[in-house]
Image (tube, rainbow, N blue to C red):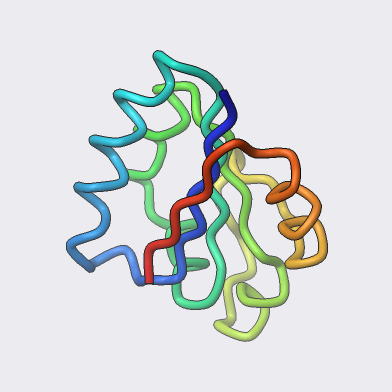
Length: 100
């Protein structure tokens, strides 16, 4: 199965622990993709997010959201993406969860 998390909440919200726990379990069942947009783009500069990558999740961020927030140097394990790409990924995934 392919799982997609769309995260628009900031890294200091309660969602971080939930996303981490879900990722730990769902990577055992298939591919996990996490797309960070809006205030979620701040995750792309937070070193603790490497935990997601170490678990095997694919990490993408909306480059437009990052630009709007002045994020110039995302961490190297993040992939730059767009909401257009997100719409294509959504069609390819079995389950989509949104964290706002």
